[in-house]
Length: 361
Image (cartoon, rainbow, N blue to C red; front, side, top):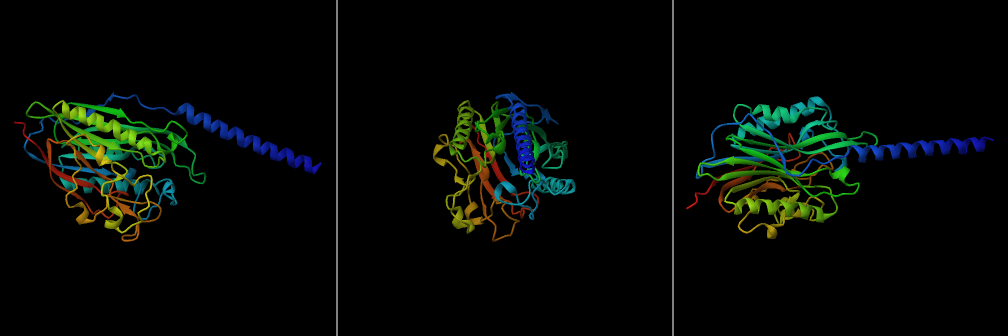
């Protein structure tokens, strides 16, 4: 009798687990959605002045890690410990530090990736609002959503939950039009892990009647199917080539989740084992004339990203360079450097570029 009761109890537990798992999978698939491709974006705090050809400008690109990664933090998807930020106070403090560090650059154009509008992982701090409003009196602002993920019930001991996150582009000049373009992603269950991807384009009028196109992008990191990353590059490269052929100027900024230095392991004294986010950037597939400015980056030996498998320890943690800029042939890079911010406010350091738009003869 006792044995029968035990089997009935076990069967009931298994049934409940299966129903719960099935219900969760149904929820995840029913609530999952992707924004449409070629979606218009709004512009906030729009300025009136236009971009001047031949003038020197400054830009900064920074993956801010949704304000949740102080040096002591490690992330479960990298083999670390945590899924969420420590607490709301930490996210608020790091976001404040991101704004302070950014303002010290006095940049004309800012590109931010992995900025949470709302998320369990970032303790529901609206970083989009905080960053955009911090520059309300000096810069036009565009926000483009990357993803609005269903509740991810993993890891089981402390689920990462829901997240609505995206890209911010700021310009000290007028933005005439802004658009979000969807990128290829995996279509199997991995789409819930690596999430949605997109790039935004902000078109700025110039004083010679052309358009200066600011492209902000954050490519997939954890997909094991490298063909997905290749397809994402292909769509990006096709777009920027068409923009340049139309007579416009193009600057792409972002986190490519591909290393920008061929010999990065030797430069940063790390393992040469390739991870899903450290493949070599496909320089040979760039459209004709486009280039990635890398002057003195190898000599400076300042990384733009750290691994999150453990708390950051300078000289011991895995680091490399995956953040930077792609420029069209009519944009002249004058200087580029990675800011050694010590990974205090993010798992990435900001990258800063000095450039000018060439005069068309």
